[in-house]
Length: 285
View (cartoon, rainbow, N blue to C red):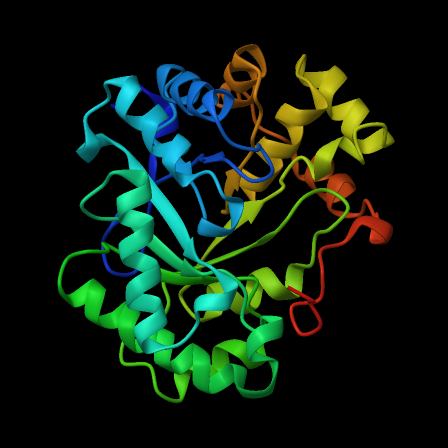
């Protein structure tokens, strides 16, 4: 039996295991604080680190990984293609820079971060197809263990499928109480994609909702822990983030209880449309 519950894995359709709970690094700034947070997460037992070139802190994430002393092969590291580098040659260059910044020789997962960035608005499908060709080559060469997408909807996936030789394995989307769109999750699962949940805590926007408060009281947990457990029970990989070592540990303490069907349904029903994620077809970056 796995002694570290954070290392328990979902299995992607290519057989690669992905730890069921990750640590997010978005909007953490850069510098020593980021490295310290990543190290604290790995010290707390996390074995899944989610990064992106767009976050501007990959060098600090890599330093935290190195300073943790955890063997590289025990850590699942994700990064994402930056929006202004779509296209075949651009993607190869962007990937090379990401590896150098992280100080790694390979990635466990690489994602197209957004399907329709502003720079490629008029030929997004062609740009994605070219990027995906580069992804497939890097995957075949063993530089990436799994490839996927982020913020893709059905029509973006359909367009990619027209030229792809390797299907995406993962789609990372915003998923949290207040933004639960069952149809998107089911669409991804029907295509064999594992769903990862960024911003699973909704930045605390729904912590005061009755469904979360009641579940937290019933299980002796925090609203944040309830959010993370809710994602897990939907078969998705939550990627919470924090710069506090205490909160980082607390967010991982979600494997000793289970939400009831009634609690899950009540949390599913929370609505917070004012804070929904950006429309991937109209982003301005």
